[in-house]
Length: 280
Ligand SMILES: C[S@@+](CC[C@H](N)C(=O)[O-])C[C@H]1O[C@@H](n2cnc3c(N)ncnc32)[C@H](O)[C@@H]1O
View (tube, rainbow, N blue to C red):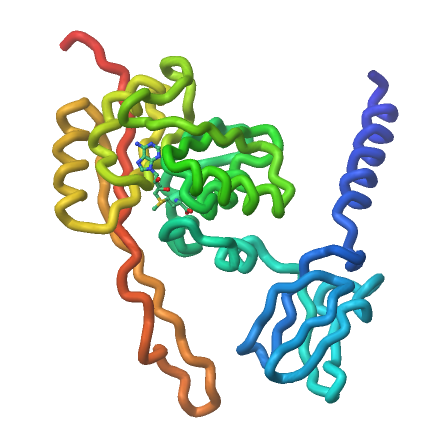
């Protein structure tokens, strides 16, 4: 193709992409209403939102961009935003303890998850981590997520549908009993957030690509030990374990300091890589 034709094609692609991410609110869009930077409500453009600070007519937002100031019928001021992914996810219907944004962030960076990757996940739970993984692998990647409880499977399906996610395949399957239904050496990353992850380490080793990362989220020290010993036995290398603490800071004039209450423990993370075993 001529270089000029390439440029025209690129321009058209960018334009279509730009138009798809409509910057203006439409009726039916999700919206986050934030009052004084402290209280917030997730609602839908076009609805009437009743709160303890006042009643907001969200029809007023149609055609306006995210970040628009909106006034309640009593004159109280709030700001309307398009919800960011973590704001959506923390308001998901929870079927289980969900992965917090701080842990999702480090899972993605330490596992080196990138656009185009194939990521396997077990269990799906409420689909919170699935949503972050879906964004990280992007449109040319894929997340295959496994769940053994029907209730959780259905709840995650509803949660993920609301986000319009299309690069996730949900599978109803017991990973301990039946293993992963994928080929050997086919996954870039496997993420386990389920009871007794040490029972699937052998299977994880089989389906990971050489040097692929296995990531495990576990809430107790005993589980770290069981997982560590299992990883050693199977032959994983570069094994790491860590805990990430996020301490919010109170932003108040003349009183900037850590908040007095925080979530002190969510879970521990372990990372390990598969190697190519050779005869030594
Ligand atoms: C803590 S939740 C996962 C939460 C999820 N990471 C999230 O962010 O929403 C653990 C899930 O693992 C599922 N699970 C446990 N054992 C499993 C197995 N053998 N195969 C598939 N899923 C399993 C449970 O049913 C549960 O829903």
